[in-house]
Image: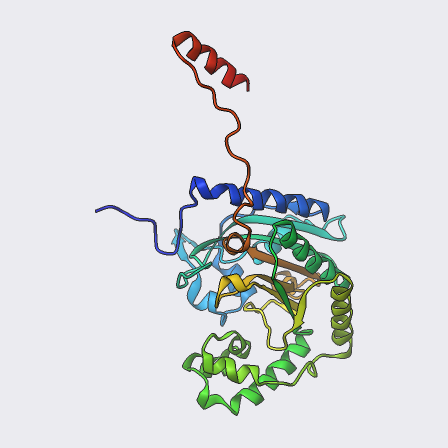
Length: 344
């Protein structure tokens, strides 16, 4: 029996690869202008890295990781790159003598989820991590970089959704507010969200069930959970986005699906992608390094799904193909033609 490509994976064919290469070429150019350096981490890591960084109750850790054992090693195909890069930053002492380390990556990620438009079990990210600063101006620069990158790729009609989760104390207040409000509607929530109220209530805000979406959209407690410092930082970031003329919308219900996020978070949506309309997302993760190595290090980043970028990019945005074609007649001409083609 003929063996097909595994479910949730896709061959990137020769007629498609030009657009991929062009997206990567333009991305590398823009990222170099912002002084980002490329980093390449292994595509598999120790399971403990993601359990500690993403959180045991996140959908990725509970349901979506490709886990395997090799002898004594308990390994996983990387579901995302931020935790891997944080590990590499600490392990290789990349902060030594450098106040702000700017890194980017391009490569495959793996999640065992239901395949659909723009979402595969092996997918590719173009992402950045800026590590070493708590300054909210870095948030503005990183979101501005994401905006610049999309424009360079010829993508339009996208929108940034922006919110702030605040510091760890603010997240606890936010969690308590959510529990208080959502408990009033518990009987109307889906089965998974009834469990999430006690396990990880922020995941309720990510639920795709229509009834849960209606309940969540009716929540309206604003940012009263934010402390004065976090509120000031968020205002500074929003004002910065206005100065850069970035198309954004405040979205109070926006949270990221990973536990390490804090402070400003954002998502980029595009109407061409349908129900799963996110081109990419990111935000601050100042407390990830505290979790991994008990160090206080500010950081912010984002990742774009490359498959989703391909869906939103203009179809003619491809690298140039064949430029020279040599036609010969006879043995002597063929030999000369091969010589000329090699020189060309």
